[in-house]
Length: 294
Image (cartoon, rainbow, N blue to C red; front, side):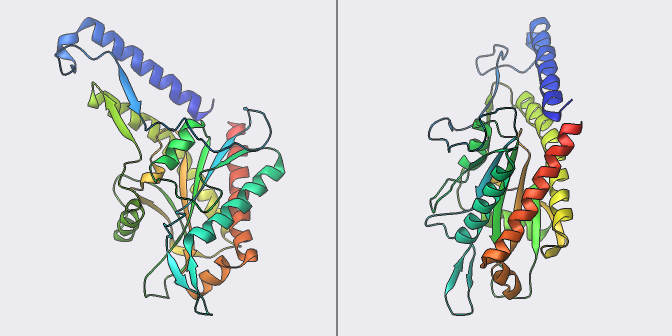
């Protein structure tokens, strides 16, 4: 049984139990603002049903849908580095090229459907990115980024982030602050008569999706060990808004530092970017192959 199906069963059972409790003892349960017992629990996201990106690949909804999120875009340059010739290197361009390559590799297999939050140099609000994944009923959300260490050129290596309510380290906290500053909206808004019940539903969902996200993060590191350079602390967690979809396994890959000469050399060349795309594509293939076996 897939984790998503198991989660659905748990949520339905929880809602049935909650409904029964409301029916038998409304006065002792959480009430609405008018004193009446709450009859509806909703997890509300901003409307993402309009202008959704196209889904590429076979017309078969049984195939996994992967949403690829190229970070930043448009006037949001992301991290900025300086090339040897004195020109500037923008994160938004690097990650778009990697994301397009990843999309093409997945489509070549004929085993995936793929959508991109952006396929051009355009701005997509931070909060909308996970909303797109949820609106499309995605099975996996992969956000691609590159980092900056300011004036320090010695900081290098790729890292993989999964969601954590509290940043796992001071470095992760700074990273979360930098990324979330791109848009002030939260990734998810919870509404309903009962905050307690809504919180439980989100927590149940996130427990499943975060377990899957953690497994996928391990696969990225495993598949990339002989192909790309990782930061000594390769797997991290942070309170990143882009990873907050409660029912879509979501991972953010920091491909490297544009401020580090070695990382930058890989990131600005087609050959180097292909390595990152190959690692992600292989990790995705293994991830869904394992899912199919459960």
